[in-house]
Image (tube, rainbow, N blue to C red):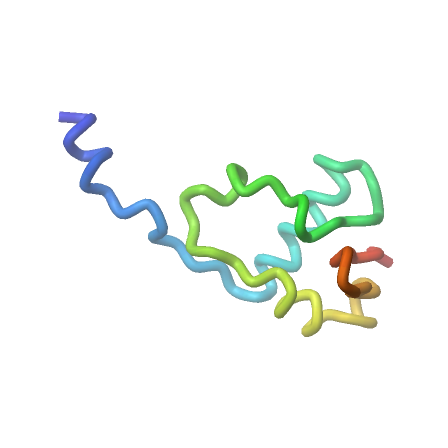
Length: 82
């Protein structure tokens, strides 16, 4: 029964609000990385396996200069948290 349910269960069922994603980034930075610098391209996708795909760059732009500095160029996409 469990295997049948698992195979038919839609994996991407939850959607985060922008404020929740911002809080996730802060928690990820402080608890997991133990750093004030977050490289958006290196966020472990397995942490968000059961959720819809998140556009971190959109959230980064939205909260730029309020909660962090968003640095983006050809080789990196980083947040410097305040």
